[in-house]
Amino acid sequence: MLKTVQCKDIPTEPILELLASKKKMWPISKVQAVMPAWTPKNLVRAKLKTLVKNGLIDGCCCGCRGDFEIKDKGRLYLSTKELI
Image (cartoon, rainbow, N blue to C red; front, side):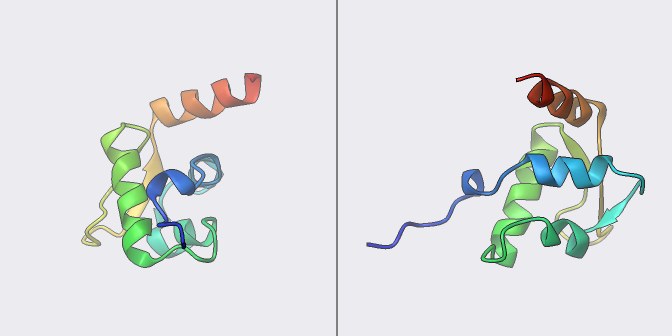
């Protein structure tokens, strides 16, 4: 039986690391590039929407802005992950 892919199957750290790098705003296509290759577009948007809802990133998942940036809470999340 095939497993249904969910947002929790997509790692958060690579997304936050990309958004924390030099560039301030990142388009959804660049963010999608750090997700596993099998990730469908609807799941990409769902993962980003979850990260926005949790306050880790800021951006628009509907595509009107089409860009994302990391928030202070996301930077804190990354720094605590590095300590573990």
